[in-house]
Length: 500
Ligand code: NDP
Ligand code: HEM
Image 1 (cartoon, protein in one colour):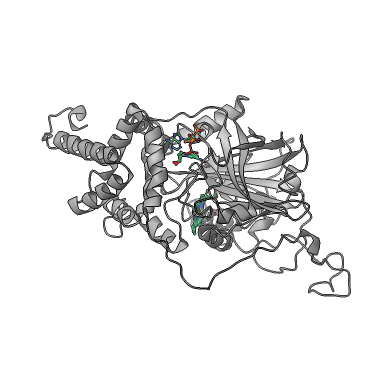
Image 2: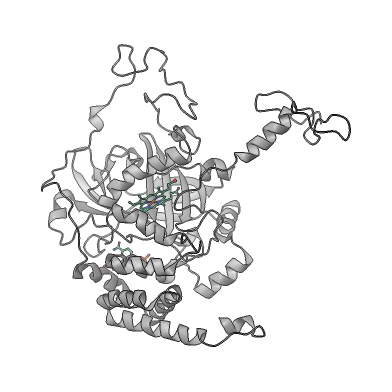
Protein backbone atom coordinates (compact mmCIF):
# COMPACT_ATOMS: atom_id res chain seq x y z
CA UNK A 1 0.00 0.00 0.00
CA UNK A 2 2.66 2.48 1.10
CA UNK A 3 4.63 2.34 -2.19
CA UNK A 4 1.60 2.52 -4.52
CA UNK A 5 0.39 5.92 -5.80
CA UNK A 6 -2.92 7.17 -4.40
CA UNK A 7 -5.97 6.83 -6.62
CA UNK A 8 -7.66 10.23 -7.12
CA UNK A 9 -10.63 11.84 -8.83
CA UNK A 10 -9.83 13.60 -12.09
CA UNK A 11 -9.68 16.79 -10.00
CA UNK A 12 -6.90 15.19 -7.95
CA UNK A 13 -8.73 14.46 -4.67
CA UNK A 14 -7.81 11.13 -3.03
CA UNK A 15 -10.30 8.22 -3.23
CA UNK A 16 -11.39 6.59 0.04
CA UNK A 17 -12.64 3.45 -1.70
CA UNK A 18 -12.84 2.13 -5.25
CA UNK A 19 -15.14 -0.80 -4.58
CA UNK A 20 -17.82 0.17 -2.10
CA UNK A 21 -20.67 2.65 -2.65
CA UNK A 22 -21.60 5.12 0.07
CA UNK A 23 -25.08 4.10 1.30
CA UNK A 24 -27.65 5.18 3.88
CA UNK A 25 -27.23 2.28 6.28
CA UNK A 26 -25.73 -1.12 5.44
CA UNK A 27 -28.70 -2.08 3.20
CA UNK A 28 -29.81 1.44 2.27
CA UNK A 29 -29.82 3.33 -1.07
CA UNK A 30 -26.74 4.93 -2.60
CA UNK A 31 -26.08 8.56 -1.71
CA UNK A 32 -26.09 11.14 -4.52
CA UNK A 33 -23.06 12.65 -2.85
CA UNK A 34 -20.97 9.58 -3.83
CA UNK A 35 -19.47 11.71 -6.59
CA UNK A 36 -16.62 9.28 -7.20
CA UNK A 37 -19.13 6.63 -8.28
CA UNK A 38 -21.06 9.11 -10.44
CA UNK A 39 -17.84 10.25 -12.10
CA UNK A 40 -16.76 6.67 -12.75
CA UNK A 41 -20.07 5.74 -14.40
CA UNK A 42 -20.24 9.00 -16.36
CA UNK A 43 -16.75 8.47 -17.74
CA UNK A 44 -17.61 4.97 -18.86
CA UNK A 45 -20.56 6.39 -20.79
CA UNK A 46 -18.20 8.66 -22.69
CA UNK A 47 -15.46 6.16 -23.56
CA UNK A 48 -16.45 5.80 -27.20
CA UNK A 49 -16.02 8.31 -29.99
CA UNK A 50 -17.63 7.93 -33.41
CA UNK A 51 -15.78 5.32 -35.41
CA UNK A 52 -14.23 6.40 -38.69
CA UNK A 53 -16.94 6.56 -41.36
CA UNK A 54 -14.65 4.33 -43.47
CA UNK A 55 -11.50 2.42 -42.44
CA UNK A 56 -12.92 1.90 -38.93
CA UNK A 57 -10.93 -1.26 -38.11
CA UNK A 58 -7.21 -0.66 -37.86
CA UNK A 59 -3.82 -1.63 -36.46
CA UNK A 60 -0.77 0.57 -36.02
CA UNK A 61 2.71 1.08 -34.64
CA UNK A 62 5.49 3.61 -34.28
CA UNK A 63 8.75 3.54 -36.17
CA UNK A 64 11.34 5.33 -38.23
CA UNK A 65 11.89 6.35 -41.83
CA UNK A 66 15.52 6.55 -43.01
CA UNK A 67 16.69 8.15 -46.25
CA UNK A 68 18.98 5.82 -48.21
CA UNK A 69 19.16 7.66 -51.56
CA UNK A 70 19.43 11.32 -52.48
CA UNK A 71 16.32 12.82 -54.11
CA UNK A 72 17.08 16.48 -53.36
CA UNK A 73 17.05 17.16 -57.10
CA UNK A 74 13.30 16.55 -56.91
CA UNK A 75 12.37 17.92 -53.50
CA UNK A 76 13.46 20.35 -50.83
CA UNK A 77 11.30 18.56 -48.23
CA UNK A 78 13.37 18.27 -45.05
CA UNK A 79 12.30 14.66 -44.53
CA UNK A 80 14.41 13.80 -47.61
CA UNK A 81 17.22 16.33 -47.03
CA UNK A 82 20.17 13.92 -46.75
CA UNK A 83 21.13 10.27 -46.82
CA UNK A 84 20.96 8.78 -43.32
CA UNK A 85 18.35 11.26 -42.11
CA UNK A 86 15.72 9.63 -39.86
CA UNK A 87 12.17 10.77 -39.10
CA UNK A 88 9.68 9.38 -36.57
CA UNK A 89 6.57 7.79 -38.09
CA UNK A 90 3.16 6.65 -36.81
CA UNK A 91 1.46 4.04 -39.00
CA UNK A 92 -2.10 2.83 -39.19
CA UNK A 93 -3.33 0.08 -41.48
CA UNK A 94 -7.01 -0.67 -41.88
CA UNK A 95 -9.79 -2.38 -43.77
CA UNK A 96 -12.23 -0.06 -45.53
CA UNK A 97 -15.76 -1.36 -45.21
CA UNK A 98 -16.04 -3.23 -41.92
CA UNK A 99 -16.96 -1.62 -38.63
CA UNK A 100 -14.59 -1.45 -35.67
CA UNK A 101 -15.43 -5.01 -34.61
CA UNK A 102 -14.98 -6.49 -38.10
CA UNK A 103 -12.72 -9.49 -38.58
CA UNK A 104 -9.23 -8.61 -39.77
CA UNK A 105 -8.83 -11.27 -42.47
CA UNK A 106 -11.74 -10.11 -44.65
CA UNK A 107 -11.43 -9.54 -48.38
CA UNK A 108 -11.13 -5.76 -48.72
CA UNK A 109 -8.76 -3.02 -49.76
CA UNK A 110 -6.33 -2.14 -46.94
CA UNK A 111 -5.55 1.42 -45.85
CA UNK A 112 -1.87 2.29 -45.46
CA UNK A 113 -1.43 5.52 -43.47
CA UNK A 114 1.84 7.06 -42.36
CA UNK A 115 2.38 10.23 -40.35
CA UNK A 116 5.93 11.59 -40.68
CA UNK A 117 6.78 13.99 -37.84
CA UNK A 118 9.10 16.29 -39.82
CA UNK A 119 10.74 19.57 -38.76
CA UNK A 120 8.42 21.39 -41.15
CA UNK A 121 5.31 19.86 -39.59
CA UNK A 122 3.55 16.56 -40.13
CA UNK A 123 3.46 14.97 -43.56
CA UNK A 124 0.70 12.38 -43.90
CA UNK A 125 0.80 9.71 -46.59
CA UNK A 126 -2.76 8.33 -46.50
CA UNK A 127 -2.71 5.57 -49.08
CA UNK A 128 -3.93 2.06 -49.72
CA UNK A 129 -2.37 -1.31 -50.51
CA UNK A 130 -3.47 -0.75 -54.11
CA UNK A 131 -1.94 1.76 -56.53
CA UNK A 132 -5.33 2.86 -57.90
CA UNK A 133 -8.95 3.38 -56.82
CA UNK A 134 -12.51 2.42 -57.86
CA UNK A 135 -13.63 5.87 -59.03
CA UNK A 136 -12.00 9.08 -60.22
CA UNK A 137 -14.46 11.77 -59.21
CA UNK A 138 -15.27 12.56 -55.58
CA UNK A 139 -18.98 12.85 -56.38
CA UNK A 140 -18.95 9.07 -56.64
CA UNK A 141 -17.15 8.35 -53.36
CA UNK A 142 -20.08 8.59 -50.90
CA UNK A 143 -22.25 6.43 -53.21
CA UNK A 144 -19.46 3.89 -53.59
CA UNK A 145 -19.13 3.70 -49.81
CA UNK A 146 -22.92 3.24 -49.43
CA UNK A 147 -22.59 0.08 -51.55
CA UNK A 148 -19.87 -1.25 -49.26
CA UNK A 149 -21.77 -0.65 -46.02
CA UNK A 150 -25.03 -2.19 -44.78
CA UNK A 151 -28.33 -2.15 -46.70
CA UNK A 152 -30.85 0.17 -45.01
CA UNK A 153 -33.56 -2.51 -44.71
CA UNK A 154 -31.75 -5.82 -44.35
CA UNK A 155 -28.89 -4.29 -42.34
CA UNK A 156 -26.65 -6.70 -44.28
CA UNK A 157 -23.83 -6.06 -46.75
CA UNK A 158 -25.20 -6.15 -50.28
CA UNK A 159 -23.25 -7.74 -53.16
CA UNK A 160 -26.13 -6.66 -55.42
CA UNK A 161 -25.41 -3.01 -54.59
CA UNK A 162 -21.64 -3.44 -54.99
CA UNK A 163 -21.76 -5.01 -58.45
CA UNK A 164 -24.67 -2.82 -59.60
CA UNK A 165 -22.51 0.23 -58.82
CA UNK A 166 -19.31 -1.20 -60.31
CA UNK A 167 -21.12 -2.24 -63.49
CA UNK A 168 -22.25 1.37 -63.88
CA UNK A 169 -18.67 2.63 -63.27
CA UNK A 170 -16.65 0.31 -65.51
CA UNK A 171 -13.41 2.18 -64.73
CA UNK A 172 -13.68 0.41 -61.33
CA UNK A 173 -12.79 -2.95 -62.92
CA UNK A 174 -9.07 -2.29 -62.43
CA UNK A 175 -9.42 -1.98 -58.66
CA UNK A 176 -12.05 -4.75 -58.44
CA UNK A 177 -9.59 -7.06 -60.21
CA UNK A 178 -6.94 -6.37 -57.57
CA UNK A 179 -9.53 -6.79 -54.80
CA UNK A 180 -10.63 -10.19 -56.14
CA UNK A 181 -7.06 -11.31 -56.86
CA UNK A 182 -4.74 -13.01 -54.38
CA UNK A 183 -3.84 -9.59 -52.98
CA UNK A 184 -7.43 -9.09 -51.74
CA UNK A 185 -6.63 -10.81 -48.39
CA UNK A 186 -3.05 -10.12 -47.23
CA UNK A 187 -2.13 -12.33 -44.25
CA UNK A 188 -1.34 -9.20 -42.23
CA UNK A 189 -0.16 -5.61 -42.80
CA UNK A 190 3.50 -6.69 -42.91
CA UNK A 191 2.99 -8.66 -46.12
CA UNK A 192 1.53 -5.97 -48.35
CA UNK A 193 2.72 -2.91 -50.23
CA UNK A 194 1.51 0.63 -49.65
CA UNK A 195 0.88 3.18 -52.38
CA UNK A 196 0.17 6.91 -52.23
CA UNK A 197 -2.09 6.03 -55.20
CA UNK A 198 -2.67 9.64 -56.28
CA UNK A 199 -0.14 11.66 -58.17
CA UNK A 200 1.50 14.18 -55.85
CA UNK A 201 4.02 16.90 -56.60
CA UNK A 202 7.51 17.63 -55.38
CA UNK A 203 9.48 20.80 -55.87
CA UNK A 204 13.16 21.39 -55.38
CA UNK A 205 15.23 24.28 -54.07
CA UNK A 206 15.24 25.83 -57.58
CA UNK A 207 11.45 25.84 -57.68
CA UNK A 208 11.23 23.05 -60.31
CA UNK A 209 8.17 20.80 -59.99
CA UNK A 210 7.92 17.09 -60.71
CA UNK A 211 4.87 14.84 -60.43
CA UNK A 212 5.46 11.77 -58.24
CA UNK A 213 3.86 8.50 -57.14
CA UNK A 214 4.82 6.89 -53.79
CA UNK A 215 5.37 3.11 -53.49
CA UNK A 216 6.20 1.39 -50.18
CA UNK A 217 7.25 -2.16 -51.06
CA UNK A 218 7.14 -4.81 -48.37
CA UNK A 219 10.48 -6.41 -47.49
CA UNK A 220 8.61 -9.31 -45.88
CA UNK A 221 7.29 -10.48 -49.26
CA UNK A 222 3.67 -10.70 -50.37
CA UNK A 223 1.60 -13.32 -48.54
CA UNK A 224 -2.11 -13.81 -48.88
CA UNK A 225 -4.92 -16.05 -47.70
CA UNK A 226 -7.27 -17.78 -50.08
CA UNK A 227 -10.95 -17.52 -49.10
CA UNK A 228 -11.16 -20.88 -47.31
CA UNK A 229 -8.03 -20.19 -45.25
CA UNK A 230 -9.34 -16.77 -44.23
CA UNK A 231 -12.75 -18.22 -43.32
CA UNK A 232 -11.13 -20.86 -41.10
CA UNK A 233 -8.90 -18.25 -39.49
CA UNK A 234 -11.80 -15.89 -38.78
CA UNK A 235 -13.56 -18.81 -37.10
CA UNK A 236 -10.63 -18.96 -34.69
CA UNK A 237 -9.78 -15.28 -34.28
CA UNK A 238 -11.15 -12.02 -35.58
CA UNK A 239 -8.02 -10.13 -34.50
CA UNK A 240 -5.32 -11.90 -36.53
CA UNK A 241 -3.69 -8.68 -37.83
CA UNK A 242 -3.50 -7.11 -34.39
CA UNK A 243 -2.01 -10.32 -32.99
CA UNK A 244 0.53 -10.77 -35.80
CA UNK A 245 1.65 -7.14 -35.86
CA UNK A 246 1.80 -6.64 -32.10
CA UNK A 247 3.64 -9.92 -31.51
CA UNK A 248 6.12 -9.40 -34.35
CA UNK A 249 7.14 -6.04 -32.90
CA UNK A 250 7.23 -7.35 -29.31
CA UNK A 251 9.53 -10.15 -30.52
CA UNK A 252 11.85 -7.73 -32.33
CA UNK A 253 10.84 -8.83 -35.85
CA UNK A 254 10.39 -5.30 -37.10
CA UNK A 255 8.55 -5.06 -40.43
CA UNK A 256 10.20 -2.95 -43.12
CA UNK A 257 9.24 -1.38 -46.41
CA UNK A 258 11.39 0.22 -49.11
CA UNK A 259 10.12 3.57 -50.36
CA UNK A 260 10.36 4.19 -54.09
CA UNK A 261 9.00 7.06 -56.14
CA UNK A 262 8.06 7.34 -59.78
CA UNK A 263 8.92 10.75 -61.18
CA UNK A 264 7.52 12.74 -64.12
CA UNK A 265 8.78 16.21 -65.11
CA UNK A 266 5.95 18.77 -64.78
CA UNK A 267 5.46 19.44 -68.50
CA UNK A 268 5.51 15.75 -69.45
CA UNK A 269 2.00 15.43 -67.99
CA UNK A 270 0.75 16.87 -71.29
CA UNK A 271 2.67 14.44 -73.52
CA UNK A 272 2.99 11.16 -71.59
CA UNK A 273 0.12 9.51 -73.48
CA UNK A 274 -2.33 9.09 -70.57
CA UNK A 275 -3.90 11.25 -67.89
CA UNK A 276 -1.38 11.05 -65.04
CA UNK A 277 -3.96 12.51 -62.63
CA UNK A 278 -6.53 9.74 -63.16
CA UNK A 279 -6.71 7.69 -59.94
CA UNK A 280 -7.97 4.60 -61.78
CA UNK A 281 -4.62 4.25 -63.57
CA UNK A 282 -1.00 3.50 -62.66
CA UNK A 283 2.06 4.92 -64.31
CA UNK A 284 3.61 1.90 -66.11
CA UNK A 285 6.97 0.99 -64.58
CA UNK A 286 8.51 0.65 -68.06
CA UNK A 287 7.80 4.32 -68.75
CA UNK A 288 8.40 5.62 -65.21
CA UNK A 289 10.83 3.34 -63.34
CA UNK A 290 10.95 3.14 -59.57
CA UNK A 291 13.54 5.39 -57.91
CA UNK A 292 14.69 4.15 -54.50
CA UNK A 293 14.42 6.63 -51.64
CA UNK A 294 14.54 5.05 -48.21
CA UNK A 295 13.44 2.51 -45.67
CA UNK A 296 10.51 2.43 -43.27
CA UNK A 297 10.86 0.29 -40.16
CA UNK A 298 8.03 -0.04 -37.66
CA UNK A 299 9.65 -0.96 -34.36
CA UNK A 300 7.51 0.12 -31.39
CA UNK A 301 4.07 -0.87 -30.19
CA UNK A 302 2.17 2.11 -28.87
CA UNK A 303 1.66 2.19 -25.11
CA UNK A 304 -2.04 2.93 -25.49
CA UNK A 305 -4.01 1.88 -28.56
CA UNK A 306 -6.82 4.42 -28.14
CA UNK A 307 -4.48 7.33 -27.48
CA UNK A 308 -2.30 6.75 -30.53
CA UNK A 309 -4.19 4.67 -33.09
CA UNK A 310 -7.85 5.50 -32.52
CA UNK A 311 -7.00 9.17 -31.96
CA UNK A 312 -4.72 9.29 -35.00
CA UNK A 313 -6.03 11.79 -37.53
CA UNK A 314 -4.46 11.31 -40.95
CA UNK A 315 -5.15 13.73 -43.74
CA UNK A 316 -3.86 14.17 -47.30
CA UNK A 317 -4.06 17.91 -46.54
CA UNK A 318 -1.00 17.52 -44.27
CA UNK A 319 1.80 18.28 -46.70
CA UNK A 320 5.09 20.08 -46.02
CA UNK A 321 7.21 22.45 -48.11
CA UNK A 322 8.69 20.43 -51.00
CA UNK A 323 5.69 18.05 -51.26
CA UNK A 324 2.36 19.16 -52.72
CA UNK A 325 -0.89 18.10 -54.33
CA UNK A 326 -1.71 17.50 -57.98
CA UNK A 327 -4.83 18.33 -59.99
CA UNK A 328 -6.20 14.79 -59.32
CA UNK A 329 -9.89 15.55 -58.59
CA UNK A 330 -10.13 12.85 -55.94
CA UNK A 331 -7.10 14.17 -54.10
CA UNK A 332 -8.52 17.69 -54.17
CA UNK A 333 -11.70 16.41 -52.48
CA UNK A 334 -9.73 14.44 -49.90
CA UNK A 335 -7.84 17.60 -48.96
CA UNK A 336 -11.18 18.91 -47.67
CA UNK A 337 -12.78 15.73 -46.38
CA UNK A 338 -10.35 14.36 -43.79
CA UNK A 339 -9.85 17.41 -41.58
CA UNK A 340 -13.62 17.88 -41.65
CA UNK A 341 -14.05 14.26 -40.51
CA UNK A 342 -11.52 14.76 -37.71
CA UNK A 343 -13.19 17.88 -36.39
CA UNK A 344 -16.42 15.84 -36.14
CA UNK A 345 -14.89 12.56 -34.89
CA UNK A 346 -12.27 13.91 -32.48
CA UNK A 347 -13.02 17.59 -31.88
CA UNK A 348 -11.88 21.05 -32.87
CA UNK A 349 -8.25 20.94 -31.76
CA UNK A 350 -7.63 17.28 -32.70
CA UNK A 351 -4.13 18.20 -33.83
CA UNK A 352 -3.16 18.95 -30.24
CA UNK A 353 -3.65 15.27 -29.28
CA UNK A 354 -0.42 13.31 -28.69
CA UNK A 355 -0.83 11.18 -31.84
CA UNK A 356 -1.30 14.23 -34.04
CA UNK A 357 0.81 16.97 -32.50
CA UNK A 358 3.72 18.13 -34.65
CA UNK A 359 6.44 16.62 -32.47
CA UNK A 360 9.36 18.07 -34.37
CA UNK A 361 8.00 21.44 -35.47
CA UNK A 362 6.98 24.50 -33.47
CA UNK A 363 3.25 25.01 -33.96
CA UNK A 364 2.24 28.68 -34.16
CA UNK A 365 -1.32 29.47 -35.16
CA UNK A 366 -4.02 31.95 -34.22
CA UNK A 367 -6.87 29.41 -33.93
CA UNK A 368 -8.31 29.95 -30.49
CA UNK A 369 -10.87 28.23 -28.32
CA UNK A 370 -12.88 25.01 -28.41
CA UNK A 371 -12.47 21.43 -27.20
CA UNK A 372 -8.90 20.34 -26.48
CA UNK A 373 -7.41 23.80 -26.17
CA UNK A 374 -4.35 22.42 -24.38
CA UNK A 375 -2.10 25.22 -25.63
CA UNK A 376 -1.71 28.88 -24.74
CA UNK A 377 -0.71 30.30 -28.15
CA UNK A 378 -0.30 33.83 -26.83
CA UNK A 379 3.32 33.68 -28.04
CA UNK A 380 4.47 35.12 -24.72
CA UNK A 381 2.21 38.15 -25.10
CA UNK A 382 -1.58 37.94 -24.55
CA UNK A 383 -2.07 40.95 -26.86
CA UNK A 384 -0.81 38.90 -29.83
CA UNK A 385 -4.10 37.07 -30.48
CA UNK A 386 -4.78 38.35 -34.02
CA UNK A 387 -2.66 38.99 -37.08
CA UNK A 388 -1.17 41.35 -38.18
CA UNK A 389 -0.14 42.70 -34.78
CA UNK A 390 2.58 44.98 -33.44
CA UNK A 391 3.69 42.48 -30.78
CA UNK A 392 5.97 40.23 -32.84
CA UNK A 393 3.40 37.42 -33.16
CA UNK A 394 4.11 34.78 -35.83
CA UNK A 395 3.91 35.79 -39.50
CA UNK A 396 3.74 33.84 -42.76
CA UNK A 397 6.92 32.80 -44.56
CA UNK A 398 6.69 33.44 -48.35
CA UNK A 399 9.90 31.49 -49.02
CA UNK A 400 8.05 28.17 -48.59
CA UNK A 401 5.64 28.95 -51.46
CA UNK A 402 5.29 26.21 -54.06
CA UNK A 403 6.06 27.19 -57.65
CA UNK A 404 3.06 28.51 -59.61
CA UNK A 405 1.13 25.93 -61.63
CA UNK A 406 -0.05 26.86 -65.10
CA UNK A 407 -3.72 25.99 -65.66
CA UNK A 408 -5.68 26.21 -68.91
CA UNK A 409 -9.24 25.62 -70.09
CA UNK A 410 -12.72 26.83 -69.21
CA UNK A 411 -14.28 26.24 -65.84
CA UNK A 412 -17.00 23.60 -66.16
CA UNK A 413 -17.85 20.00 -65.22
CA UNK A 414 -15.67 17.77 -67.43
CA UNK A 415 -17.22 14.32 -67.45
CA UNK A 416 -14.69 11.58 -68.08
CA UNK A 417 -16.68 8.83 -69.83
CA UNK A 418 -15.44 5.25 -69.64
CA UNK A 419 -13.35 4.59 -72.72
CA UNK A 420 -11.45 1.65 -74.22
CA UNK A 421 -8.36 3.12 -72.59
CA UNK A 422 -9.84 2.26 -69.15
CA UNK A 423 -9.52 -1.44 -69.92
CA UNK A 424 -5.88 -1.43 -71.05
CA UNK A 425 -4.34 -1.54 -67.56
CA UNK A 426 -6.77 -4.08 -66.08
CA UNK A 427 -5.96 -6.21 -69.15
CA UNK A 428 -2.22 -5.84 -68.49
CA UNK A 429 -2.79 -6.95 -64.90
CA UNK A 430 -4.96 -9.91 -65.95
CA UNK A 431 -2.34 -11.02 -68.45
CA UNK A 432 0.30 -10.85 -65.72
CA UNK A 433 -1.49 -13.57 -63.72
CA UNK A 434 -0.56 -17.23 -64.22
CA UNK A 435 -3.30 -19.85 -64.67
CA UNK A 436 -3.61 -20.50 -60.93
CA UNK A 437 -3.93 -16.79 -60.13
CA UNK A 438 -6.55 -16.40 -62.86
CA UNK A 439 -8.61 -19.32 -61.58
CA UNK A 440 -8.53 -17.94 -58.02
CA UNK A 441 -9.59 -14.54 -59.40
CA UNK A 442 -12.55 -16.18 -61.18
CA UNK A 443 -13.54 -18.15 -58.08
CA UNK A 444 -13.20 -15.21 -55.70
CA UNK A 445 -15.29 -13.01 -57.96
CA UNK A 446 -17.90 -15.72 -58.42
CA UNK A 447 -18.13 -16.15 -54.64
CA UNK A 448 -18.56 -12.40 -54.19
CA UNK A 449 -21.19 -12.15 -56.97
CA UNK A 450 -23.09 -15.25 -55.87
CA UNK A 451 -26.14 -13.48 -54.44
CA UNK A 452 -26.46 -10.95 -57.33
CA UNK A 453 -29.45 -10.82 -59.67
CA UNK A 454 -29.06 -11.96 -63.29
CA UNK A 455 -29.34 -8.40 -64.58
CA UNK A 456 -26.47 -7.18 -62.41
CA UNK A 457 -24.38 -10.24 -63.30
CA UNK A 458 -24.90 -9.73 -67.02
CA UNK A 459 -23.94 -6.06 -66.82
CA UNK A 460 -20.77 -6.97 -64.91
CA UNK A 461 -19.90 -9.81 -67.33
CA UNK A 462 -20.06 -7.23 -70.13
CA UNK A 463 -17.49 -5.11 -68.28
CA UNK A 464 -15.19 -8.11 -67.81
CA UNK A 465 -15.53 -8.90 -71.50
CA UNK A 466 -14.16 -5.48 -72.36
CA UNK A 467 -11.07 -6.31 -70.27
CA UNK A 468 -10.48 -9.76 -71.78
CA UNK A 469 -12.77 -12.46 -73.21
CA UNK A 470 -11.05 -15.07 -71.01
CA UNK A 471 -11.82 -12.98 -67.94
CA UNK A 472 -15.55 -12.91 -68.74
CA UNK A 473 -15.61 -16.60 -69.68
CA UNK A 474 -13.68 -17.61 -66.55
CA UNK A 475 -15.98 -15.78 -64.16
CA UNK A 476 -19.11 -16.98 -65.99
CA UNK A 477 -17.91 -20.58 -65.63
CA UNK A 478 -17.02 -20.09 -61.96
CA UNK A 479 -20.44 -18.57 -61.22
CA UNK A 480 -22.13 -21.51 -62.95
CA UNK A 481 -20.01 -24.03 -61.06
CA UNK A 482 -20.79 -22.36 -57.74
CA UNK A 483 -24.53 -22.20 -58.46
CA UNK A 484 -24.58 -25.91 -59.45
CA UNK A 485 -22.95 -26.78 -56.11
CA UNK A 486 -25.37 -24.57 -54.21
CA UNK A 487 -28.30 -26.26 -55.99
CA UNK A 488 -27.62 -29.47 -53.99
CA UNK A 489 -30.15 -29.33 -51.13
CA UNK A 490 -28.78 -29.25 -47.61
CA UNK A 491 -30.81 -31.01 -44.91
CA UNK A 492 -30.52 -30.96 -41.15
CA UNK A 493 -28.50 -34.15 -41.40
CA UNK A 494 -26.03 -32.86 -43.96
CA UNK A 495 -22.51 -32.34 -42.66
CA UNK A 496 -21.35 -28.70 -42.82
CA UNK A 497 -18.94 -29.56 -45.66
CA UNK A 498 -21.88 -30.43 -47.91
CA UNK A 499 -22.93 -26.82 -47.90
CA UNK A 500 -19.48 -25.54 -48.86
P1 NDP B 1 5.14 -4.35 -64.30
O1 NDP B 1 5.21 -5.76 -64.78
O2 NDP B 1 6.36 -3.52 -64.23
O3 NDP B 1 4.47 -4.30 -62.86
C1 NDP B 1 3.47 -5.18 -62.49
C2 NDP B 1 3.08 -4.84 -61.08
O4 NDP B 1 1.99 -5.64 -60.72
C3 NDP B 1 4.15 -5.07 -60.04
O5 NDP B 1 4.30 -3.88 -59.32
C4 NDP B 1 3.57 -6.15 -59.13
O6 NDP B 1 3.84 -5.90 -57.79
C5 NDP B 1 2.09 -5.93 -59.35
N1 NDP B 1 1.21 -7.05 -59.07
C6 NDP B 1 1.40 -8.36 -59.22
N2 NDP B 1 0.30 -9.03 -58.82
C7 NDP B 1 -0.59 -8.11 -58.42
C8 NDP B 1 -1.90 -8.17 -57.91
N3 NDP B 1 -2.55 -9.32 -57.72
N4 NDP B 1 -2.52 -7.02 -57.59
C9 NDP B 1 -1.89 -5.85 -57.76
N5 NDP B 1 -0.65 -5.73 -58.26
C10 NDP B 1 -0.03 -6.85 -58.57
O7 NDP B 1 4.04 -3.68 -65.26
P2 NDP B 1 3.39 -2.23 -65.38
O8 NDP B 1 4.01 -1.20 -64.54
O9 NDP B 1 3.29 -1.95 -66.82
O10 NDP B 1 1.94 -2.53 -64.83
C11 NDP B 1 1.13 -3.58 -65.36
C12 NDP B 1 -0.06 -3.70 -64.48
O11 NDP B 1 0.37 -4.05 -63.16
C13 NDP B 1 -0.80 -2.38 -64.30
O12 NDP B 1 -1.74 -2.19 -65.31
C14 NDP B 1 -1.41 -2.51 -62.96
O13 NDP B 1 -2.64 -3.18 -63.06
C15 NDP B 1 -0.45 -3.41 -62.19
N6 NDP B 1 0.40 -2.66 -61.24
C16 NDP B 1 1.23 -1.66 -61.69
C17 NDP B 1 1.87 -0.86 -60.78
C18 NDP B 1 2.64 0.33 -61.24
O14 NDP B 1 2.85 1.23 -60.42
N7 NDP B 1 3.09 0.39 -62.49
C19 NDP B 1 1.81 -1.14 -59.34
C20 NDP B 1 1.01 -2.28 -58.99
C21 NDP B 1 0.30 -2.97 -59.93
P3 NDP B 1 5.19 -6.39 -57.06
O15 NDP B 1 6.27 -5.63 -57.73
O16 NDP B 1 5.00 -6.01 -55.67
O17 NDP B 1 5.24 -7.87 -57.28
C1 HEM C 1 -10.25 7.33 -44.13
C2 HEM C 1 -12.84 10.17 -47.07
C3 HEM C 1 -10.60 8.25 -50.93
C4 HEM C 1 -7.49 6.09 -47.94
C5 HEM C 1 -11.17 8.23 -44.60
C6 HEM C 1 -12.07 8.98 -43.79
C7 HEM C 1 -12.78 9.79 -44.61
C8 HEM C 1 -12.36 9.53 -45.95
C9 HEM C 1 -13.84 10.81 -44.21
C10 HEM C 1 -12.19 8.88 -42.27
C11 HEM C 1 -11.16 9.76 -41.62
C12 HEM C 1 -11.20 9.69 -40.11
O1 HEM C 1 -12.28 9.72 -39.53
O2 HEM C 1 -10.08 9.63 -39.49
C13 HEM C 1 -12.45 9.91 -48.37
C14 HEM C 1 -12.95 10.59 -49.54
C15 HEM C 1 -12.34 10.04 -50.62
C16 HEM C 1 -11.42 9.02 -50.13
C17 HEM C 1 -13.98 11.71 -49.52
C18 HEM C 1 -12.47 10.35 -52.10
C19 HEM C 1 -12.92 11.50 -52.56
C20 HEM C 1 -9.52 7.55 -50.46
C21 HEM C 1 -8.45 7.03 -51.27
C22 HEM C 1 -7.57 6.44 -50.42
C23 HEM C 1 -8.10 6.57 -49.08
C24 HEM C 1 -8.35 7.20 -52.78
C25 HEM C 1 -6.26 5.76 -50.72
C26 HEM C 1 -5.51 6.08 -51.74
C27 HEM C 1 -7.98 6.24 -46.67
C28 HEM C 1 -7.34 5.68 -45.49
C29 HEM C 1 -8.14 6.03 -44.40
C30 HEM C 1 -9.25 6.79 -44.92
C31 HEM C 1 -6.06 4.87 -45.47
C32 HEM C 1 -7.89 5.66 -42.95
C33 HEM C 1 -6.96 6.67 -42.31
C34 HEM C 1 -6.56 6.18 -40.93
O3 HEM C 1 -5.80 5.19 -40.86
O4 HEM C 1 -7.00 6.77 -39.95
N1 HEM C 1 -11.38 8.56 -45.93
N2 HEM C 1 -11.53 8.98 -48.76
N3 HEM C 1 -9.28 7.24 -49.14
N4 HEM C 1 -9.13 6.90 -46.28
FE1 HEM C 1 -10.32 7.92 -47.51
